[in-house]
Length: 116
Image (cartoon, rainbow, N blue to C red; front, side, top):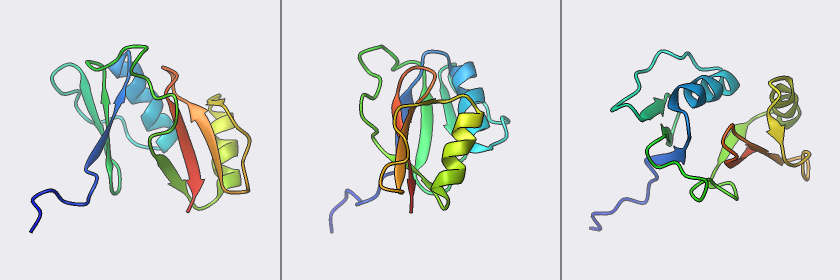
């Protein structure tokens, strides 16, 4: 039996300002901002499935994601796109193949939303 599981536990996102990033991510994901900032630099977003941890200690301009390391799921790609537009999120693509689009967070991390 292999001691390493074939599961992803958490993805760490480098952010420059943990408080601002916490507010921004919670806003676009429709999550309450009621978690605690741990050790002065970590915020665990309450996700279903694989976790996301915002981390200001690992932030540098060299560490931001230049390509999406994962995608956020949606059941309605058009609604998701309009939601992000309404939040003034920097969209870096249109809806591609009626299936996905990319955007940037406050620090320039490239992320994706995908219809699954």
